[in-house]
Length: 580
Image 1: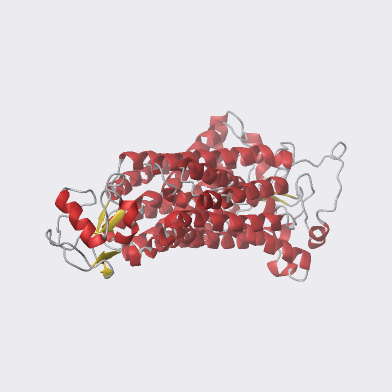
Image 2: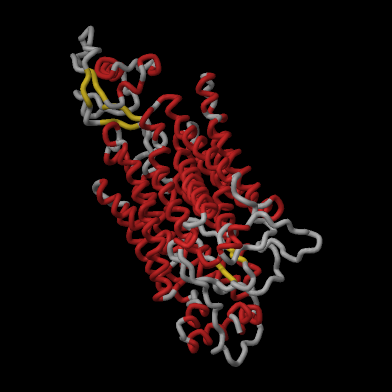
């Protein structure tokens, strides 16, 4: 008996699985919070150099004398900052007299300042204002976001390996412990080095927490519900972002915000007494007695009956293959190159557009909330379009439309139009396209390659995608580095050009909808040329056919963010979606 046959007898998505699945979605909320908390705690408020001779200087103008000193030392006219360029006072001060009876200042001589004042109308404090990560140190902000993505990159394979060896449940709570400890400690960071180290471990724990909880849930539900569950968990990731935005709106101090949101991790510890270990993992390790206890509980809650003998329950053996097997075939190599480029670019788009929400102008909290809602809409669009339009059509459509929206940022710059709603509209169209294509790339790429090397290609592509995520913070911060209206649009121009290139390249790939997935290298070489009769052929979209034979859940693919569920006989691979 196969394990999926056993799950069907116990109930594929009965009351027990629904309860555990809901609990397993809660770590996605934590991942959504910590993934994008730097949008707020690393926000850069309006700022300028502090007046050297004034110890109690503030960003807001205090009186006429304060206004005079601003003009003398920074060249800023307090009545019309734009006329003299507020940016001129962000990093350098004029060298000259600052006495009230002075009639001139040395406007052509400046020096770097070492003290700043910040606008506190939006943020009372951020880590940027605490450590003065501006001017010559402004690149450290990008480094911090890159370090976090590096932690996610490391955590993907490490958490997978440890979960396969020690079990899903222990790794869930080990990741939760590390996440909580790192989040709390981050609030008390005295310097950037400490902040970077803790964010690195936060990245490791975020991906470990998400993947292990997700895999546990997927190993409990039946094959017909795995795709739906994979989509639903994405909405919990969006919920985490909404919680983050709401908390940041009411808590404007970054330390308090970090401490309060770390409570979300603390609240998950009681789940230890509610989560079971994965029966599938226990059976694969030969721990039949422990698995029987859990399976009996499932049968009792679902009001079904557990078969007497579960000792013969086994997973379908995995086919073995090497990634190098495809290197002698130019068609497969070119497909792998195109897919890898698309993974990197779509990850760059998704994280870059989200991290850049603070530079759009207007209310950052409203922008973030709208962006999160658009992301959820992108997931819904993918769920609707994939089984109808096909993977290739929807992927290319979504990424090209999103990229064109990003490239359109250059139009208001040339026309000197500064309406903030235009930037917000274009950004969210780009986010909609990025979210839809980000969801699709996992299914699309998994269906292009033969079974023996499918997981290897997915793992390699996922690793390359992480590189795109590590580059994203630097592209997103181009607006801060360059400045001005063109600087604010420059990140989107880079995103748009990259996405347009990858979308055009993806047009060279074959469609996979309603196609028999390749099992061998030769089938992969011939893939895409099969004409199928939709009226007479029984092959259906694997994402929507509930009558296919049970799929086997492949447990060992630690390098990818998605656990693949592979059935050799059915020739299908379904990749449920996770999201950190």
